[in-house]
Length: 233
Image (spheres, rainbow, N blue to C red):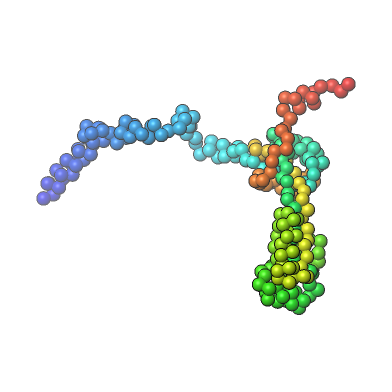
């Protein structure tokens, strides 16, 4: 019995070896077995196998987009740009975000929790939802009924609530004035300076945020170098 089992195992091993050599219909390791895989490769000649140390070294130099700021205007940018350039941050660009204004329809400030509760009861009876908030430049809480990006829209909402709901005590408040925010951004921020902090910019560098528009292109490196090398006249 054992003899027959041994013969069967030897036969199976022989068949497996013959199949692996391609004698029974192709080599499973052959590139011609699945030609669609070769056709699906993208720029195969650009791929390179790296050792673990080479991979760690490459990861330390992966380009990362980071920015510092924001500032309410562009005046501090030149000083911050010079400080970042001394740290080796390349290709700095100025980006600007047009910040829209915000107007809210809200109750008047409540002196205490009891008055805040009374104002909420009036809103509830009118079927109006609201959230209790402390608005900018105010020290006490109010009930905010709605928020609007345009002053005209806030005024129209206020008129509807006053006339349709009888909420004459509501008011319109400019929660945020329109303005701009400026940042300095580099698409190739050095990993060694990922947490760099200095008096020339607020906080630490952060990942590039959406919504900003390119305000200016950086000066070419060659031009900057030649300007620095040229003697003063």
